[in-house]
Image (cartoon, rainbow, N blue to C red; front, side):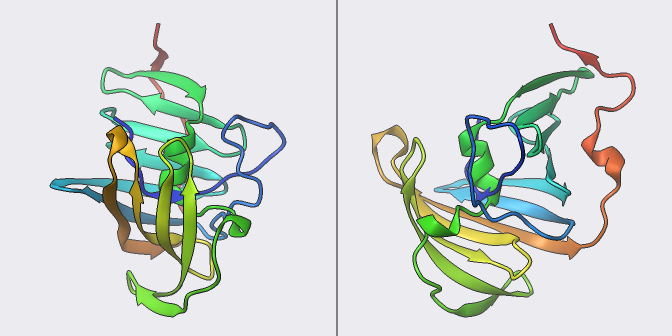
Length: 185
């Protein structure tokens, strides 16, 4: 199951999810990503560094690794197998801010998740026509997104945010396929 939250992208290959001018974090960090839609609440631990995002506990799998350089997502499954797939547009939007050209004006500064942020508006986009507000740090980390989309033909409110945000280097092994994993058939 794909959940929505925060948005990003880059690099030479032009994948289907291409988000030219998307806002990418300029620092490495880890955090707990919280996604709330109605009564559903999901918490996932994330790590970001150098165009790669690791999502622990994502999509019913043990781990998902997004590689913004290659436009792929790697699913590391509980049975020690993995799949490498083209990156999903909606999953990308969950974690990274939309291109600034698609957003409204700066709506003011306010603290979120213990850091200073700027609030922006974004118009409906993507397959679900999601539109609302997001809060972005000056280092490009989207720490909150509050929006509505048209999932299942009705408007649903979503609140996605980061807690326990920690800026700093991330171990490069977090973004690699672990020894002992084999390609799923």
